Each structure stands twice: as C-alpha cells, then as structure tokens.
Image 1: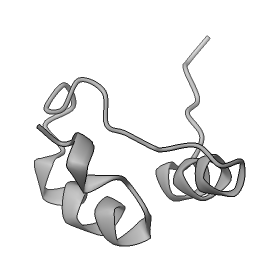
Image 2: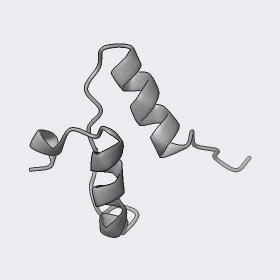
Image 3: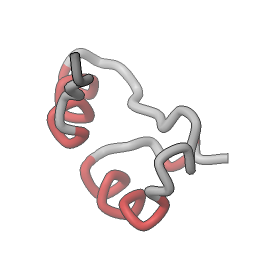
Image 4: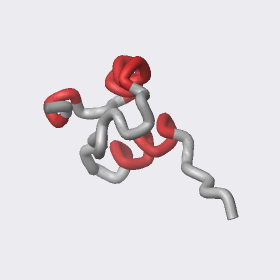
Length: 50
C-alpha cells in the first residue's frame, strides 16, 4: 500500500487551530528545503528550525 500523507498546509492549519506548534521533523529527508519558506508563511514555527 502506498503511503498517503496529509497536505502540509492542512496539517499546519489543523495543528495551529488545536493550539499546537507545528514543527519540521527531519528537515532535508525529502530534500524539500525550498518549501520551508512557504510553510513558515503558512504557520510553521520558524523558531523550531534549528
């Protein structure tokens, strides 16, 4: 069975709505650094991008 992931923007929105802090685990695992700016604009916590 192929893995299906929730849309990252939906995930960020739902986490924020629930009072959580969305963070990026394992940055670079999918070589997606160029997407981080858009995720931060959508609500990803930039303080956690260390």
